[in-house]
Length: 77
Image (cartoon, rainbow, N blue to C red):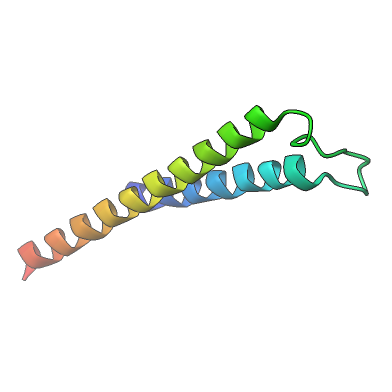
């Protein structure tokens, strides 16, 4: 059960990081936040790479949880 809670927290953190990255890329006219990626291109490239690697790690963790659940199901039958 704790793995599923950790997976939910992991995916919600990935969503929050993606939202912050999109604000940096597009800005927000309502909050008067300007686009950052045109000034700090290296920051945006590194941020995009880290978010994509985080998503890959999240999906790897998802597969590990699925395999663990299947393994427990096989042992119980």
